[in-house]
Length: 439
Image (cartoon, helix red, strand yellow):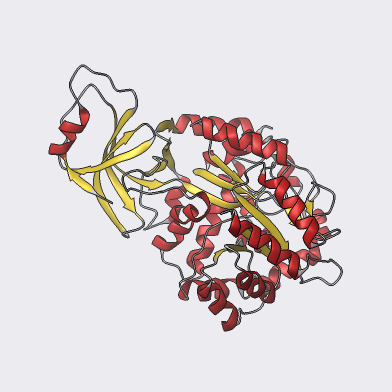
């Protein structure tokens, strides 16, 4: 973070009487710099949606630039969720909120999520909404894979959406070439060998798809089911794996991930969400979650319907015994962690579950700085854009009363959002909750 004195600010602000509608001055902020792991008192000068400078010292008033006085409130890069399926929240009885992708985006924004990666959706719809999100500063920015690559009857080929089937290398090349025309931000590949009853793509198909991604400078995200899957995907050259398998990760896998500089999206939500709901401290009792779901969703998680997921809940219970140890092991090895929830699957809620994801990272041994970084600046691995408080970073921030470094509870009390330089106040966020909970 480059800091300049306020003597320079007078020069930057230009001549009096000339209104510059592209500039915004955020005054008197407690700036949470996650790269430097420190909090700096200062001011942010934003120009055309990007951070121009961070300034310190006293500021003279100037009518040519719009300004907001934060009065020593805390400012943090906007949150990012690296594993989303942009549908309405769903209950275990099959009831799902009737939300389109734009409405999903608005729910996420109400929880402070300003970027997200959709990892399986109807291609025409998600790519159209991605374009819309990049033209409007009132919505989070969408990154997406389109469909997923899987094999016939493999995971992702259950009939809910249309995947890209790659049963052999030739089919993989054909499907990749077609997807490339739509310019995906990442390519998602399902390589999951944990179930004998469900096939997975072949290793030569995995190798081919990852090679094509690397040749075309597109990040590859591999859904894995076992630690052997993780080792194979990393050795093949993938960029990111998503999910944490059961059992303690072997050192050989950790070393391979580190050697190949593979990032990991843990997804505590999908791997423990229903198990937590079935326990004594259910998130369904949290008023902050209830702001975005309705009574139909709540009733859909009754014990009667949870029984239908008993096998999955037992799997989550088993996984919960080792997931924190595994994430701690990954973090200790210096492997980059990117927070992602796998919303909106049963037990995983849009926006809200990202906050529990951060809590779980802390339970895994990360300090508050690194846990916050995983849900903010680490997303740059996917987006390719700078995030934070260096000149040239996109000006997308959330403003809080208190520091989340001291307590993550402060993330539940967003005062306002600045998205690409556009200010969204608390009342606007509240109106999103009101509209969506009634849908």
